Length: 410
Image (cartoon, rainbow, N blue to C red; front, side, top):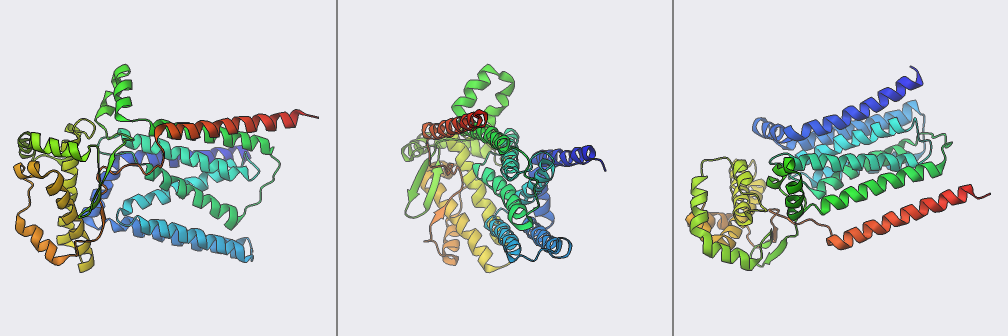
């Protein structure tokens, strides 16, 4: 096979991998529901663990039998990376379908390395491959945000980046392929700088893509008006603490929650009665979080409460049953304390006996953190984040100018 053909095939595989990631996004929920209905969502997690074990064993055989490498450190690095993949997969076990990101982006990291090694011949290849993979992750999440009933999640950006990074570290420190090292390192640094600047700017734009900004640019670009109905990429929400519950999040302050519940219970109760036989997803689209935060958040709490109660009834063991009953109980407590009057007027109120039966079966005192409307776990406000981004960009630009001048000097 000629070199040109090898390069073409390697980049074709990268493109096909990226396309497959993007094409799965619109049908991901359908796939999840199918697996849940016919088997169990844990199948996703077990599949990831199986692939990780098989990949680890393959790498061991490759090192020992083909490459004849006997250095202990290679095997130690591979084992550590495999354990990291297992650790992060188990961390996601409550939503095991998200662990599929490790397979998608791990494969993408490997294919990017294979394609880039035709062009980059120093260790900069690992950082370049990582940043390209991370950029694909941003576009993946953006596409997901634009699709009805799917949401943007900053945590998924981290999962995608971790998956790419772990694969590349496994190649770098575990396989340790030989690199000619004939490429100018300044060229690699320049490419890394361009990619990092692109990533930081896109990340900042996504962080700043609040509902108010969506409203602003969709007025100028009406063909994007459908985005107004989507869950926003980022909102600045309230984190409420309750000694009886734990923590829950809302777009509304406690005072606003109380006043809305008092003033609009009749109106909102009638809306819930009207929608009792209609689809949950259609409700969220008709009453988006930005435009109707009280209705939207209350409906999500109801869905989570009822879903967990259903899972408790289907549980295979007592531990799983108690865990789901605990979540259902706490979500109902949030509804009764902060959406109480509207709940009374709606068809979703639990009978008193149900709560008492659950209380008798579980420990109700542990801390609970409701994921409904959970805020972005980024410890910066918008101005601070953009300040940090601009500072890093300035440092990268000045650093590249300095390297360029140094090379030109005699």
